[in-house]
Image 1 (cartoon, rainbow, N blue to C red):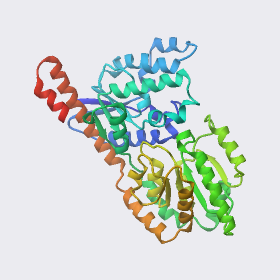
Image 2 (cartoon, one colour; image 1 turned 30 degrees about the horizontal axis):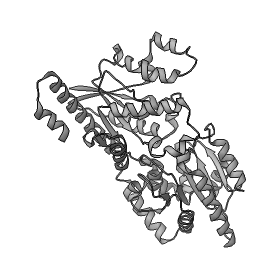
Image 3 (cartoon, helix red, strand yellow; image 1 turned 90 degrees about the horizontal axis):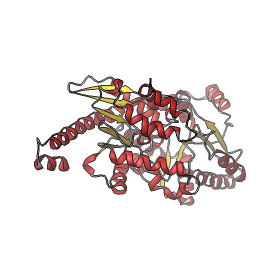
Image 4 (tube, rainbow, N blue to C red; image 1 turned 90 degrees about the vertical axis):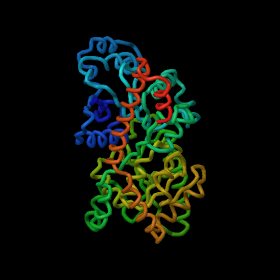
Length: 420
């Protein structure tokens, strides 16, 4: 019998920005599953950063530092506190976001790697975020990944990146794909009632003019999201639609981005591209409203250069919205070919995909049906089941390593670890 502690700090709205992003959904769904399990060989418990820091005089001292307070807490104080009285029950600790994991720990750590953006997309961030703080934070993240007892990758593509870029052996990586909440499948039935006065009221509340096709985007606006490309594609699409005497499409961007450093640039790009009437910055959209937004959308547009998984794409697939997305990283792995893919630098391909998606023709209907079927394969229950198996594997590795260290198991056990 062993005890696993899951870090649920990502559910706290005051902890970084996880709660309103995919990380928050991942932590919420994972803990919902784990909390419902009664397993014969392990106990599953939750903890968060506030619990770990509680009663620490050093935490108060760090508050007076002129800079680097977050780093000092996470990489100096936090690991030390993991052996405190309130944490002693845990045999294994799981951090479900690699940027939250410590670079060292007295306890075995299972660490979920969401992506390797700073390495794979390094050129996008060097110019704007070349500060020593940014570089130090990335270096610490990579050390945390390399020192983890076991790495969970949220897609096959991410697992390959971890092995290729960080040189972590494949036997220390377990793939645990993300899932989709069943409520997104309800959009298909909601769509049939979002007509008449209900649709008019919803459009009015969202400040969306009537009679225009709606293209939806859900996500952030950092450089790898390729938002300037999306705006260029929208402008070219609408130029062609106006020539064909069709109503211009409207891009509704959902996401809590108003405080992002790129937000002023986004506003300027919209104005410079003469897209003020064609783009709505919807901000953070609560799930219940998001289902309605998906219900009135004609296409989902995702031009990201790199995704660890691509949860918004999966949710759009479940909702029965035609997906137009970049053929990069893990996105083809999720979409499975049931949508319109384009090279992330090809404006022509992206516009062509959007044009077909907005027609709503037979091929679009086929993609929507097949995409919904595929989306049903990605469940949070499966994510949880694979994670529990990963905990068992981590415990096995730890027990074997401990036996080797104590001299109880010799070369044969070491060989078992390397080939398990």
